[in-house]
Image 1 (tube, rainbow over the protein chains, first blue to last red):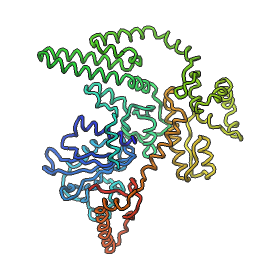
Image 2 (image 1 turned 45 degrees about the horizontal axis):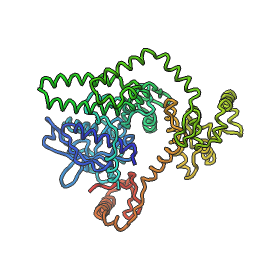
Image 3 (image 1 turned 90 degrees about the vertical axis):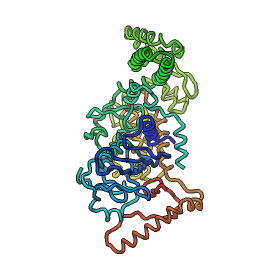
Image 4 (image 1 turned 180 degrees about the vertical axis):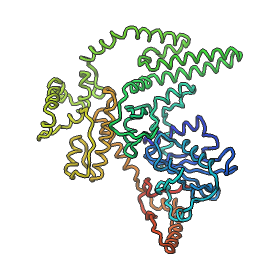
Length: 151
Length: 396
């Protein structure tokens, strides 16, 4: 089965392997075309100096028309960054992953966006509704309808 | 398991800009690709903002969001403009690509060998020469004649290749008036062999012949094109009055139509009308109402996208129908049954117990607070696994 989504992901993988990830981002695993893992760190001066996070991408068969489900991995080895748009379960409130997703974006474009989201953070704090959200959050962040009130 | 897919896909060669080691060529290849699917443009259309995508890609996108994926300027289907010039450039590049790829690889090899043999200074010069040579071949790649010009025999004598190429193409440029005319005259009475049944038939009848399943009897009737042509003309003149009558457009006419299918508001249609609608396009009517609507929507999409190609590149209605079938099968394929229930339970036991524990925890939480929960009910022992969002499994 060579659907559009897996062909497109294959091309992205090709590019990552040929030209490498953007700086600060490393491909951890891409064993199938359903979920990929990346490590992400913020280079230069930021509140997250020295911290390394793990990102999980999940793709459905409508990718790239539909956005990938992207979240930080929270397990015994890694945590989600403390950020006003990142919930403690790893879910990310970013418009680019929701209603502002565009099919011309790519996995590495999303990584870079998240990198700059973290880099521009001014104070390390959780979203205000963190506890309430995390308690009832669906497994897949794409099922949450976030309200994007600021940039 | 999906991993098999990956193995298959990784072993198949998918053409990609990264095939080229030279950045110039990589850029050229990338610039002829749709930024949505990453393939070479298939039926490219231009939006009002000037950005260009495969017709099918942008049609799929616009269902979700009526804005340009690149610049987010609002756009509608009516604003799509076909781009035959780009289409021509892409098909020329498609034929030239493998050749250029081979030449550039040979070139790279040669450079490497020379660099190994010669002093650093001289190898630099040779590199620059070869770069020039490559650029000239780039420029010519838009010329669809490149394939017959650059034969495999030329590759044995690389130094003469670019010269002979440019000389020949120049000659073609100088006598453009004779070529097209000849072609036109030839096309009028050209006899070709059907690629399927190998029967000799007039070029213009090939499509109808293949559409009718290589039925030569039918062909004889339809080959009297003047008649059917006249019928078309009349129906155009009489407009819809002919169609509105009992003799609705039959399948063949609908297939050869060059008019785009208009959008349908399915909600106002009764089941019977929906079925009729599918049958006008010779589409199957099995399944339920939801399936019919999805099928018709998809058909409209691929049919209209097909019309955005130039006539010679268009697929036959028969091909489109099998594409539609494949699309439907793929959608169905996303639901697969678990064969061995016990093995499935064993492999996912950890996940299931985690979910149960989580559910209990959240149930306890729910009792204490009165916030409504919008959780999807999970049946851990269900035998059906869907790849849809309903049953996402966290990778361990």
